[in-house]
Image 1 (cartoon, rainbow, N blue to C red):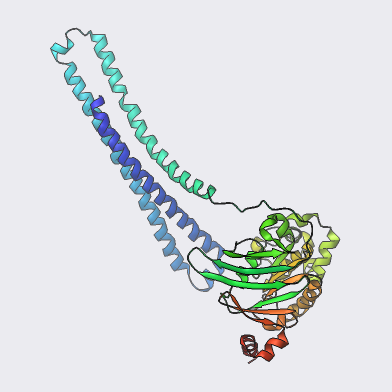
Image 2: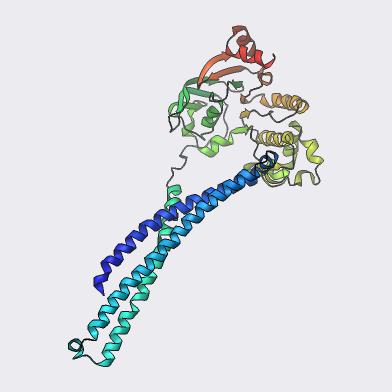
Length: 409
């Protein structure tokens, strides 16, 4: 019986490697199926408007068939491995029976001992077969475990800094550079001082590094070289919660949740703000009027990603949330991009009021919204090209003047 163990172990080893490889492939293909499904459901309007149903159906079918093929390979491997092991066990059993039936071997063995021995030998095949079945599930679990532990082993955000209650808003970028792992240089030798209460506008073509700079300030990204200081303190010395609690942000891509208007405005730590503060922020952002017209006012649900609201209304809710935070540093990343002209006029007035006594960073492509900024920083290729006020840069006749002229010609 033990003579057949080496070939059985060899078969199990080969099958284990194949199970592991196929299980990883199944996880990847199943992830692709889920990814395509999520994209189609989330972007159903684009799919319908541009007639992408047939293309998406083919893409989904291809991914599903790929997943099916890998699943069938597991079945085939199992269908070959288990019978092969059973065949080896059956061969060993047949040799045992043949030896046992020889007279010279059975001379001193009773009938009861003979039957007991054959029964015990026969019972060995079932545990061995079960072992091969367990092996498939074990390798599938190992493949899943590798994915889980790879995620758990990702480095966490370093958060061992000190807490701060309030800051003035002085920001210094000292020789800041950022290079992505693929070698792309996003920022290099960036030097900029922003005084507390100043409004600084960042302009430049797409890919100039404007949004990267903002992400460095909130420690969403970490600089490769150089240092960023707030009130002369390196931002690494501040705890993440303390740092981000001092920064309010309005992004071009508005993020809203499938919840009520109230919970979307007074979100997270802002839930402790009073109703009076929330309504004051909504009025300042010119959102109070349309909110009160909703069926249940501030308690109205706005649907997934705020789809029950217009683009301008969603943007105004985002601005309201930033105003309610009342942070000393305000970041506006194309904050008025989704607004109509009338709403933009009123929102710009509200933002001008809010910017007082706050350090404000404005990322804008429409240059008319930043003419009153204390300082305009023109960026290109991750570097500063020009710095000055609107009038100074226009007189200089450089890149900003050309951009401004293109906007009005």
